[in-house]
Image (cartoon, rainbow, N blue to C red; front, side, top):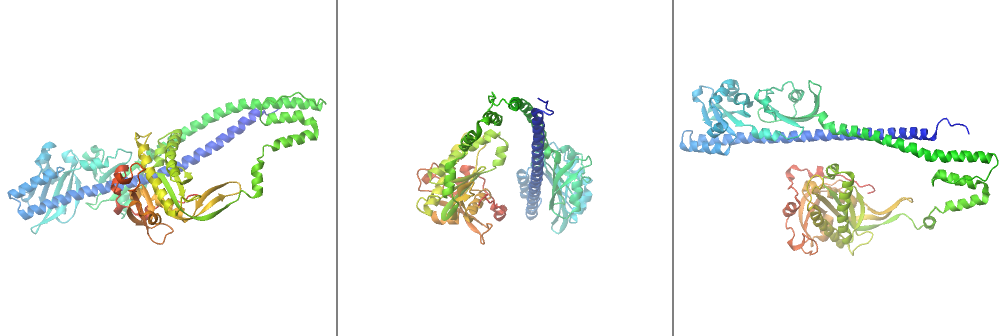
Length: 625
């Protein structure tokens, strides 16, 4: 037999190597690219959110100090600055505002005419020489003069006191006299607010770009100026109050940055995070994927090389047998070594001389692998598509922050956790005569009233709410003993709506399933998504509430404008079913208000004034709906 030029083993190794490199390499690149994009977007959003929060905290802190000080000065002006009552008021003020060191009323005439209010407790507790206050006045007399004329400043006094101390200078008019109120106070609370403990870094600069607050106090103490920082220059060049952007510093390091201008003293709050720190997990994952791809490729080559022997040896036997047939020896003695295609080919080789009858028998044998019963049913038309209109109650539930939870678990831990959770939730559906329509990741969609109703739409809706309350109880039981990274406390949101749907076998002739479709289904999904901004766990629509309002205790939520609806719709948070006796934690001894439910489940109280429900209403659309 002629020697082959390229063996089967070599060909398989080359093919598998190419496939592994192309497929895994392409998948790794695509995943890394899109994960990197998502990570960047998330990092920018988080940085901007942190900046806005830090700016709001700084604005509140400075405004509180100003308002408290002006209240004291107004009081002293009304009762007289030299009376015992005024001294008592000053003492009480410094006792309640222990972060304020001193208040100076500067009139711009002579220093002896200035008035001082000093917290002795602050000076003693921080070991500060009172003469340093005079030093501060001498070094900042220009700003004090400008404050008398109506300007507002925030200055750093840290270089003088070697402590995180700021000074706010405000114009102050008293008894027709134009003065400046200088407030010296500790910035430790602002420093604590800005020390997030994360890779994000927030700081405050004043009108001169002098550093006022920074988590590295050494920079503040030496009077660092950030005027050359690109983000600071961009903030001064723009007229907007806040913005997020990307900049590169003088060392070539890229940063995600956001700024917010304060209304006090032309100050600005800036938050930055290095781009490399944000993308480091992506790069680490990419590197691990490359290592994994190399390991998989190595194992695949070994496997294919040994596997090729199981092919090349039988093929060599067949080649020898073909030589025998060529020489006229038709009765070859071959025994199949495997049960795959090579083995089948060997059998065919052996039976090749048995004629057309044998081949026909082989056809009949091969035909037994076809499921004739299924084909006959399809031929008789018993497997058909179609549906009918029904009044049903649709339920959606979803685990809060499931993506963040799953990222901290191994794949098998995610599966075990979901199986345990889904088992409990599905039991609640089954015992209330509902049907689980589908699982969408961690979400559950269930239906009451199709394919079989429990008697009426009202009874189906009541059963659905009973199931949701049972899920609340089951979740509390599920969370017992949980807590931590590997066993986090689970919270869910449930959305319930009643309406007309089309129910039946939907799909294709090759694959079909029983499900429900229609606007009522989408409305239920959107209702579920409103639980988080409304601070609830079970929300029902007005359609469902009108059917069961005599049996449930609810609290009406703010109306929401839902996509596809002309008018705002009413939502109701389910508190309890007072008359049930078979649901733990419900019934007469169950919660009476939504506040009790939130306390029971650990749901924070939402601030409706800060939540735009029309924007928060997510437009989820379930596949096939």
